Image 1: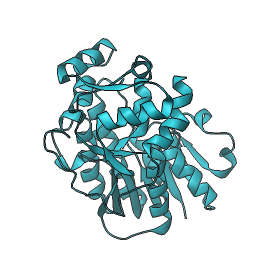
Image 2: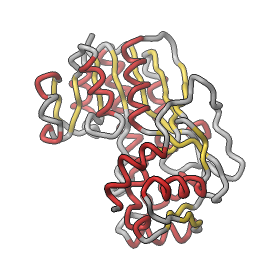
Image 3: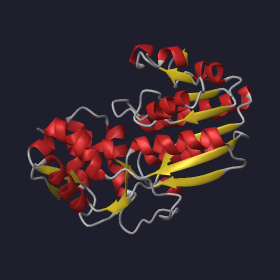
Length: 290
């Protein structure tokens, strides 16, 4: 079986590649720079080097594959990240059709079910529609809030705070992206038929106040959650060099998934994964904050 994998150096894609290799597969990895791949994996993968915005590259790279793991990368430094996401999704769908790819596992997000009004998540919603129309059997994994997003707030946490535009008592699904990769790899190996949507919600729904307390206990630092306004976040992003469309896309992700929003897929045995924020924060954040 030939399984093509995008974002093989990302938080989710790297786990997918590692598990496929350990299962005896030789995945075809689509990577911008092969030098970023771990050296120990190179003998066990087929490398296709190029840019996912290059539709000709994607079409050639997935041709003849039995299955595709598709994750649309978000580039906050792009001039218009949302437009890039839609372009990449169009290229993926065209490549799947032309290349005769039978099955696709795609990574999406809680909030994509809204279709509009959730910032950059709207790009994932459009990707869901694009790949659903490709003719392949498509499994969409709508994932919760990645633990790894906290890595972008290390300086804040060192100063004792964790900022969000969410209400501090608003609970949402938090998930380790490695667990998402494990679900994706299992589904790629096991197979399915038809088009389906499944959620990956992590072990528990947490508020930002609860998350800050968990991170505090795990790292030995006193960290308190604080709420900022959308305008404050937008101003900070613009000051950091993001374009107006990029800043609007980031702000919109939280704005579109609060105020009464509830995920279409609920929490049950099929959506709950094992790794806790406590375990992840102790192993990953604690060394970075000490």
